[in-house]
Length: 249
Image 1: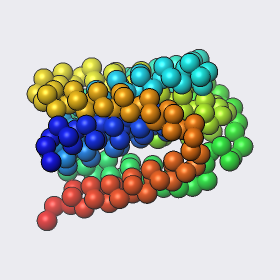
Image 2 (image 1 turned 180 degrees about the vertical axis):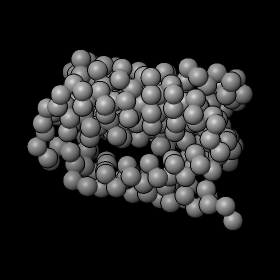
Image 3 (image 1 turned 60 degrees about the vertical axis):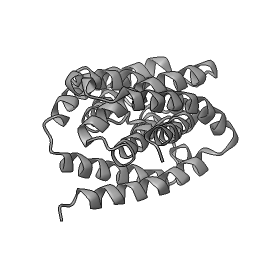
């Protein structure tokens, strides 16, 4: 199968995930870029940030039109993550490839385990002080910078638990957070950006942007719990594969 076809298929999956769940696009993009398109872990995390940035901004417009974005809360959360995202991005360039893979596998497995628990909308939401929200945003920004993921799979439950958002609002607001923090993480990756093969990555990003619109429609037809569980099972498989691949033989 040609690299272009693989890029289009993987890009569509990234867009569907982001549009439907408000996160998870990066944890689909990074393994696809490594194992399907042959990028190094550092290059894959950089490319994933570009793809996730563009796709999240697209999906954000649809959720904003539906009134599912809490702009004030989302910007507070996002701006707290800008600095850590930039620092994490600089750190990622210094880490060995196997360390990045192992860290990504660990985060992906943790995200999958969280998704398989009862949904955050089933627990009593409570409002938190701005300091706690900013602290959570900073931690999310660091993850975004190091691993090249938007962090929506962590942001959605945090926005529900810490800021008292309803699930649909958390999904839409998560896209705002990703749209702010992912470009910030790219600021210190100029050298890696120059070496990427845009003949393949541009179609990947284009398919992701188009898939985000379909993901938004899918979210309105399928329950969030069903979407999360299906995604979590696939994510566990990816995490296991990447963990095994990171272990030197």
